Image 1: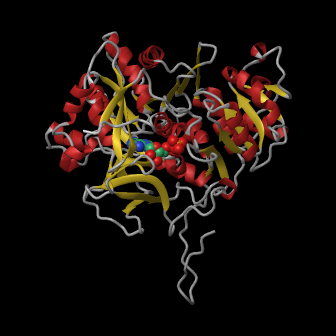
Image 2 (image 1 turned 180 degrees about the vertical axis):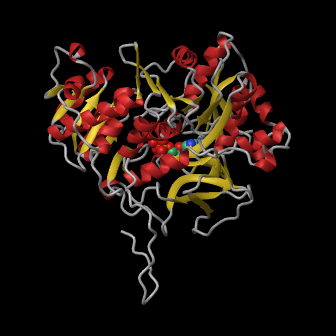
Image 3 (image 1 turned 180 degrees about the horizontal axis):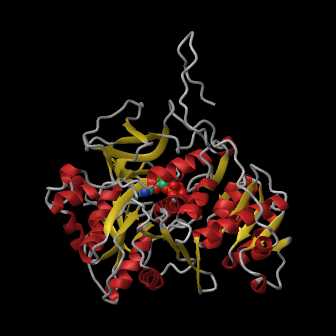
Length: 554
Ligand code: ADP
């Protein structure tokens, strides 16, 4: 625990405000009491629509917390979920953390062996799952050594019949067996509330262990107008999954603001999302670029418009400028580009304009909005060179990005990876510039930077230019070995269905848009790019696939 210096010979004069711990349960208790009739709407795994209120949600969350106590779950125990975005998952967010136990959300897109590794590492006691994941549970149940019971998130009628899952329980039976006479316990706000593992593209996954305090502070700050701007007048549909960094905090920040929530369940295709947006009057959403690709394509192909959808947060990987332009100019949707990471709960920056930008021409405003944005209160950041010396905020000098703040990890669960902080700062593994107004622009992940003749080439810029070409659907740029320059950029491109563009045409497209030596040496076309469990392009897979690629010598 941090020791704070006190002036000698004196005791500090303490403030006289109520000392209430910042606990996750206080959010749902507040929403139930002050916005009790506001709705939570979910598309269920079964396909139907479920609808209830914050008041109902809080009662059921307390019943589930009581049931967990009945099962012997103690404060600090880990309770895992393998579930889509839906009302039962939201109940567990509050039931598990609110009871003092730790909610461990697991990405079901991981391989069953990776899931078993994470469950064992976390020493989970119970595992709740949506029926979609029954086969995954069957495949891995025997490898999970610490699990005392598996809970199917359904009612009795839908319980699986012929299954080999040991100790199988029914979610609705647990709720029904509780009297509801349960008061949210009060405890130290620094207690662990939730656990989320990084996807571990290199090495084993590592756990970020959030506290109640960090979660509540993050929910407060991320809802502010400069950030996600969540209010009671919004209808919020998180496309970003609740199994990946707590859906960017929306299951906390939306109830905190009293906003109506809409959960898409497993139906994340363009048609299903669009229908839900329209039927429920969604005003605000959040997701990674690959999700928006599907939704935008569906709207374009069917010549549709949104009636209520006004604002979206895009992050997780760089939002291609062409996607931002389409959403703003064609569909009238404001795009807030945001940056963060699992280790930051996840929000670090978000991009909105300042008053002084209001008079700028659209093109100049757009150039700002393309950046990853401004730090939100609570987060501090700096860029440093290889020796750790701080670099200037001039918008062109790039360096390693370091962050600190009350919702940034101080180390990984079970000290995995050892000491991670550098002089009290967390190294993000990203390379970035910061401009004089404090806007951050991510150039690359340090492991993806292309090192050409001792200089760095940022792959994100090259990809953005490629994706602005009308015939390009997706593009990824990687470094491949070059005898003279060490590495040179290779662009891997997926063309839009039915549209043609040649290698030469696309190379010419780069001229005048970047320094000549940044222009890729070669372009290859492919049908699809490898995408990982969190919807991001897996550049390590691309590098493996093209490591032997011979660049043209001319
Ligand atoms: P992982 O992908 O390892 O599970 P995260 O999901 O926490 O980890 O991803 C964090 C990383 O994603 C950041 O360090 C950064 O490289 C990338 N990222 C997140 N948002 C953006 C963005 N808006 N633009 C560019 N990169 C981003």
